[in-house]
Image 1 (tube, helix red, strand yellow):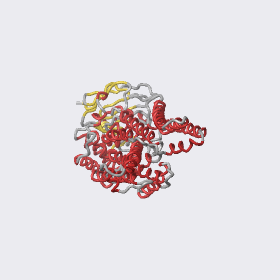
Image 2: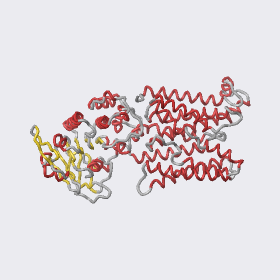
Image 3: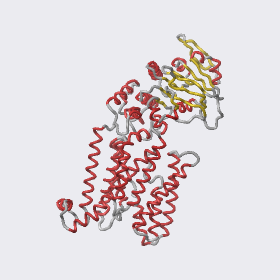
Image 4: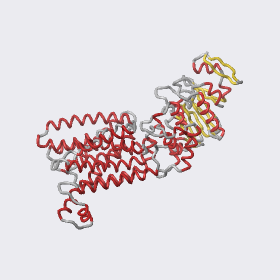
Length: 326
Length: 254
């Protein structure tokens, strides 16, 4: 069924409410549970010192980091899938997470601090983007297939470097590295950078929705329907890369969200990018917020890598939707 | 006035030497058919006329304005292209697909208006797709998909139709319906320019023909002057038998 405007607005509102609920839950739940009354007290400027400290400097930043990372990844995934016209594309398919991981693990190897790890992750992500793009240019211009192949090969290269780094690292640093590779929000303290990228990106992609619907029909058909294909593809590629780089810098390479969230929404809402893109941001943010809340509570005081939870939650949900839609 | 003015055009086909340059004018109300064997460059010519690939030499003008001075959007507001091949990597319904023909007329923030939806519905009716409108395009047969493509072009309300084998995959009944539809478009003032592999469709429905020979030679003119057995035999390297049916020539491989 085509998604009419009448169905789109309730769907987006519903997702936004779920997102708020997830944020609220994430702030309330943990080693110390905070009741709704106490939450309200803190929100209105009262409440105990302990609660305020817990909420304002620990749980809130982490919840916001989780939400923005999920939103960034899902949006990047939805964009990559349209750009490459490949439903299997995800934000990492062009090797961005590999580059970021090599940067981050390198920084961890030399016992760098949080700033160095984040900085080199971001640098690695950008380096990988430029590398893939440069190599995909080749003789003529790039095509989605060429880009995809180049990305997959470069990602495989990064994979080898990562494995090498892991085998060479001292045992006491291994857990941190593995957590980073599976996605970890425990060191995400300043989510504001992610939000500063996410909000303009959403505003930028909203008016592009219909053009992306046309682009999904293939480059020739899109050009014949009035799309300047190359500039649009450039924009989408740069945007998706930037979103992924910021997400990876915030929380390591959280898997699954970018691939599956857009597909879940397509199964539920149809494939109109005007709805899928904003819905992806909301659903991706919600999923990662819930997953992170579970990651730090189910085996408390142990923290699980959030990527494990996103997959455990997402796989059955996705399979159910796929089965239902057959 | 010529809606499509082709001057000294040499289509850029990689690895092929320059053929004879093409210079012709397509006027509104005309129905042009392009004939030629496989690989003669029919599709490449059509794409060049749509501005989808740059010519090796020469120029194509749309209502007097060279294509390279026009944006894709300006071209799409006048020219509809029916492609021979389609790709659909993501599911979309017939209605959604057809409605995309309104894209060149809508601004970024605009949604399809009631009028746009009416255009799409009329196009669906014109191609007998009403009952399929909520079906996913990926579940349709080849002929049904072909009609969806034509309905998309019709929704675009073009003044110029560039159609690459518009009767591909269609059964006889729908072949006739589609040719009637294009005929009617021409009667309403559109120019129709289409590649065809079926000589008899061309003989019956086109008023002008362009023959593309594999060696790069070409000739064009009013259909009755082009439908000469010798020329067609040389075009396809195939003996022809001409029969007269209801006063019109019908070509059968000999």
